[in-house]
Image (cartoon, rainbow, N blue to C red; front, side, top):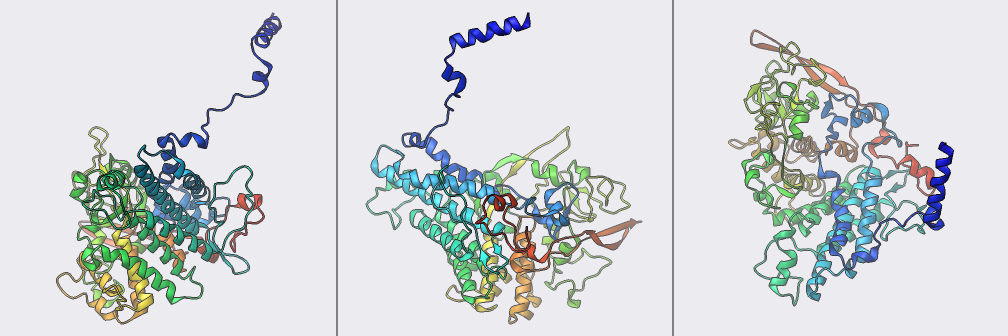
Amino acid sequence: MNNFFLILITAFVLTFTSCDDLIEPNIANNRGLEAMYADPEFAAGILLNGYTRIPTNGYSFNDVATDNAVTNNLQNNFRRAATGQWDSNFNPFDQWNNSKAAIQYLNIFIQEVDKVNWANDEVVRSLFARRLKGEAYGLRALYMYFLLQAHSGVTDNNQLLGVPILLQPETVASNFNIPRNTFQECLNQIYSDIELASQLLPLDYETAAAIPAGFPNVDLSIYNRVFDNQARGRVSKRIVMFLKAQVALLAASPAYNLNNSQSAWATAASAAGELLTINGGIGGIDPNGLTWYRNAEIETLGSGVNSREVVWRGDIANSNNLELEHFPPSLFGSGRLNPTQNLVDAFPASNGYPITNPLSNYNAANPYANRDARLNHYILLNGTTAGVANTVISTASNSTTIDGLNRVETSTRTGYYMKKLLRQDVNLNPQTRTQQRHYNARMRYTELYLIYAEAANEAFGPEGTSTFGFSAYDVIRGLRRRAGIGSNTTDLYLESIKNNKDAMRTLIRNERRLELCFEGFRFWDLRRWKENLTEPARGVNIQTTSGSSTFTIIPEVEERSFTPDMIYGPIPYLETLKFNALIQNKGWR
């Protein structure tokens, strides 16, 4: 009976369906490139792929693969990489596929942008094409930077290579088996794209009272239609100027500046100094820049408007995701990122001296007293308060709460919880849960000031000002004064080393570590500096009895298992299998 009905159904299908439809699949509902010419929204969507893929749209928290932090999530991929599992088949720091996909979309857009009917008026159409093309060049440079950071490196023949440079869209007929370009060739290409973007874009997207230079014979109303504040948040000249400084710092760093070229450091200082001059030099340091993530101004920031500290950011939205991940468990969080004792020890005393210096007056029996104010801003210490009710958090191993050392799976492993980036006015109690406004800063001026300080110290010495009128010493003095060091008295430690380039280098690197902690910098900084990657993550065991505490250092909360070659990341293993033209970095299979 069943076979009879099957025969009937088959005959019916064959009778009323053509053979072609049975054998050939229907044409997929995919729009071709020609569809974008008359549909600017479709065309803009291709460019938007370049924005949605930006790795810094969110926080990676790869500090947990460094001496800055560990995580209580034992399956965390960064932790797995840091404890010996990192290889070319398992690379949580990988940017190969994401950035190459973004560049493919951007190359398509650059090739086709001038053919799109952005507006009926020809002048308006050409201005939109100009702006959007500038954005695409800037984004392409950004993704090349991410590729160099993650995948460039020295090969077995001691050649410093970057990645393959792709300037045209790839098709099914393309030759995919192409070699890596040299690091310098990649660098030159990034600078070329940045220059093209700079020529096409305004410094900022604001409603102009007069036509800026570089836009001849354009009516003011038409200019503002294309370049006014409705485009805030898109790539601008200011943003690509910042990117140029980031790229130049990478190129000048010891891992990539193999001949220790002083001109490379001067290039980085110049790139940062140009934008800092526009920002007002040392006077442009935001006095509230330490706590940009929770300042009251967040509540009043308009669409696309930045705070004084921020150059480029993502959207502002109400959320409690960061707090759910990182609040201590007694506040209904998962306590995921645990700062190390290594990082805590990097914060100086309130008088500016490192705590290893006898002049710091550091007291190991009372270790958090008279310390740099940033310590309390960024790290939740034992006995301090957190959350909407100012709850006292005890991280002691004999604590009666679940916040104590290793008490439950979500407790701290180091004796500390992360405080930076979190809004303490978020309530995570399931009965009264709330959200607050957050945004992710992709570029902050503090980073740019630190880029200048690092590069200027190497190029001109601690007090050399070049043509900008301010020095590495001036920058570090300004940042430390903002933190409260030397604000009422002289920063005696800084004064003692201001003629010592090596000591200033150490201080600048430490200031960068403190100011940018938990924002995804430490992992890359250690590598470009060629510093020790295997410093064990340390913690503290606190015992509290009758109001007094004892502090015992835990020498190894977690190992760091990296080989010396791991200052550079790998080319993905499958890519080297598919394409024999791709040479792997030294030490990776």
